[in-house]
Each structure stands twice: as structure tokens, then as C-alpha cells.
Image (cartoon, rainbow, N blue to C red; front, side, top):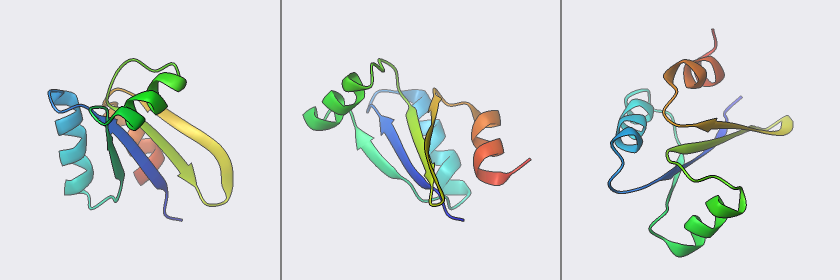
Length: 83
């Protein structure tokens, strides 16, 4: 089951760059939303999130969103690659 992944990033964020590199290395598809784009920034603020990277993961058969604040490799591996 392929997850739907959205990653909020900022251009000057080293952890955003590291997370994108990690996802790319594993060929995991994601949609990047740059906070420099006003509508993406608003979307993040509406969620009361102030830091990036911020990742939202949804699975087809599960309506619940899973969020990951920061570049948390252990949590991302568990969610996306299994244990």
C-alpha cells in the first residue's frame, strides 16, 4: 500500500534537505510544499506548526493522518519501511 506523503520544507533548512535526500535515495515519492509559497505557509500555520520539515502521511485504507515533526529517521523508517 503506497502512502501519500506531503513534506513541508524551507529553502534554508538543512534538515529539510537531508529528509528529501533520504526519501529520494529510497525512491519514496512525496509532494514538497515550500513554505516560501504563501499558500503553503498558511496551510502549515493553520495546523499550528512552526517548524520544518513537517511531514504528513496518509495511507489509502486509513483516513487518519500521521504527522512527523522534524527529520525523525526512526519514525519515518517505521512508518514507510516497516520494522
